[in-house]
Image (cartoon, rainbow, N blue to C red):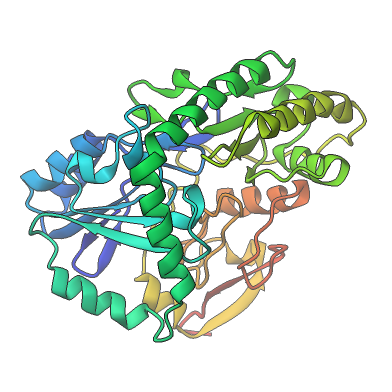
Length: 368
């Protein structure tokens, strides 16, 4: 996403139609967006994605700097990246101007432990600090700061060895899971032009379509029958992540449980069909600023009546937590069909006013 004045302009991801999976935009995508919007103030890039695919940060940074705008990287899932050469490139090492990291995700700090990394002169540190201060709590937790400091010291002193061991575990896990009939583990085949630039080896993205079940069903089966929780699930996939805290025992448990899933899937109900949109079907048009739409006069209408109206809420399947509809976007039939059929198949949409998506919150028509 680039910001043109106060208006966000979406730089659409690269879409893998075979796997129904979005990858980060490439440098040429960013270049076209900046050329079309010469008043843009900056670029926000999300990498790694929830499924472990990574952008060409260095290439995107070079394009941004050609246009004299900063590159901000949302690297929520990348706390581990600076500490081992065998992992995808850390944003600060790839010339990003600002990197935001959630250390509680792939690091060992406690919940809500996030940090900024800043370099260069394209982002004023004083302005950044003042804007952060507007949103931060006035009752900061010493536990958060202590866990951040403890994690950083742990990684500086032992990170390379710990993460090297985790890389060995990931290679073993991938090989053993790949041998399970009906489960595909994504890997380096995703790395090619138009797809991912790199893949985080710690992210085990498992395609369960061949088992005849959805990722939602797989996640529920593993939780209910085997007491194993996975980090993400969608219509086709489940996701597991390894960290420096894992060991042979936890990998053995994961592999053993996935082998059991093959038999469990034979007894599962046939899942409802999900109406996947076309590649363009989720590229909704932004017709109002998100803030203006969110705070506008609104009404709750049936999902079908919402088609063609301007959304006044975020509608986000979770996990992985990527919005299908954002405030200010014009709602399409494709989006409604996808969300409603997805809910029927097990999709969770916790933050919408109506999690079942029978109705949607839209901007009230001026003539209403």
